[in-house]
Amino acid sequence: MSEHHRKHQRQELNTTILIRNAMNRDFIGELVNITVEGLMIISDQEMSTNSIFQFSLELPEPINGMTHIDLGVDCLWSRSAENVDRHWSGYQIIDASPEALETIDALISGYAG
Image (cartoon, rainbow, N blue to C red; front, side):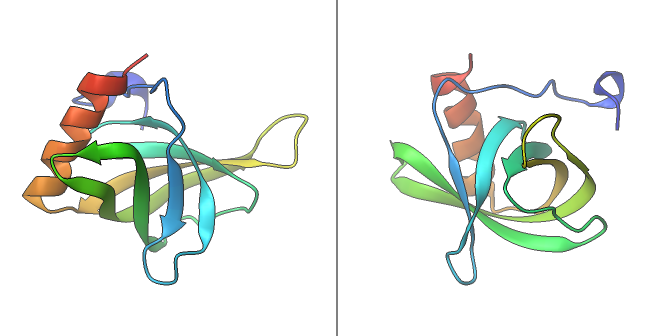
């Protein structure tokens, strides 16, 4: 989805947010940008498009009493990063609690670039 079709502009954060598989805690990658509707990550592995994942975003410090944000996401696209052995991928958030969405808003407010 192109930037002009998004309801919210993606926000880059000035801190590193690690992303883990919420089911087994394996490291997935790092957050590149986020809105309450979606996110982009960079990882060492290519992610499967049209696949559903359960992500856990590790917060740099507790926000609203939470140390991580658990989300269900759908991988919309994935491509190799130029000149490095990493992969970009974009996701639509398809499952998030109201508390998770509030915490994303607070994360953006506190750490947006």
